[in-house]
Image (cartoon, rainbow, N blue to C red; front, top):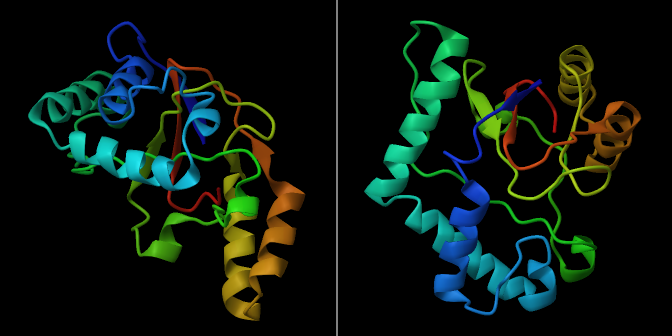
Length: 184
């Protein structure tokens, strides 16, 4: 649950994703304001398009280089794997009004092992309600146990998460690293 600074001139994911977006939707000129240019359906199409492009060798080599430069030094000589196809999530303002919502969750809810880590690299500035919210490790573990033991409803789970969650403040050139037990 820490921030990593990286060289934006070497790994400018924001400009890269914008250029890929413009291949499909030439009218997109800002990732921050994409919701003003594209409909929610078009944004969903765009995320799939960008993710498919991430499978190109050029991008795989960039992801490998990023991991070699920034992740390997954090884990020493331990072996690691990189997800074959990184995920692009686009969260728009007032997303629930258009039937979209990204609820609190953590990796083990999706069968991700505890040994996995997440590198969250936003491509726009993130702050307050314009960010991912996280919960520290100990409260995440307690909430997870309570969800399982007491079979909490989604509403009860969300309510408890909001008592402990805080926004991650980042700008392009920063990433947030966290493990699968962190509720986010």
